[in-house]
Amino acid sequence: MDFRHEWKHEIGWGDLLALRARLRVVMAWDEHTVNGRYQIRSLYFDNLADKALREKIDGVNSREKFRVRYYNGDTSFILLEKKSKYGGLCSKDQAALTRREALAIAEGEPAALAESEAPLVRELYRKMVTQGLAPKTIVDYTREPFVFAPGNVRVTLDYHIRTGLGGTDFLDPACVTVPVAGDPVNLEVKWDAFLPSVIRDAVQVPGTHTSAFSKYAACRIYG
Image (cartoon, rainbow, N blue to C red; front, side, top):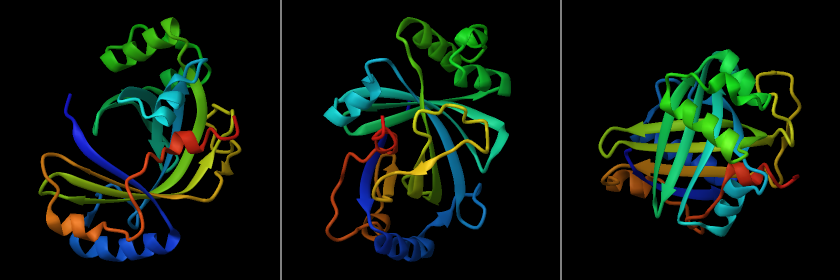
């Protein structure tokens, strides 16, 4: 499991415009973007006690969360992800899902995952069965991702964040979502062993500081 450093900042719309202009000078767009951005739809999991949400709010040092996601409305490629955090470092495991598996997950029927060849899929199955892990809410947003090879740096600007409230039918393109309160913009900076000074300077936003902003937590404010 490879761990990376991570900074998160909640910024304003004016900051987004300034950052976009600076980052386009020193970084490249992620190759998977369309005109520099893509749409992400995720389905996040939690248990009956809202363990993932509570640990995030309380700043627990060691925690994990599961989500399923796809990009630009294309359900032909769906990913299961587990994001782990230990101290100031984070890691992410991924596994591809079939549409049948994704539908079973959304419907809270984990039996379809039991025979998967992917260890991460089987781990989700076990935790759905033994820990009560279940789909909790849909999270939609627009992402502008930038990359920089030295340090394996990735900078993302996320905005237009919307919540599916209690809905979990994330494969339905017509499912209802609503904007989260405050219309936040999120800046994330991730890197491996070192953060080059040119990127460190480019991502500075006066008046902001590293925060614990979480799109999942923001999308759970309605319940």
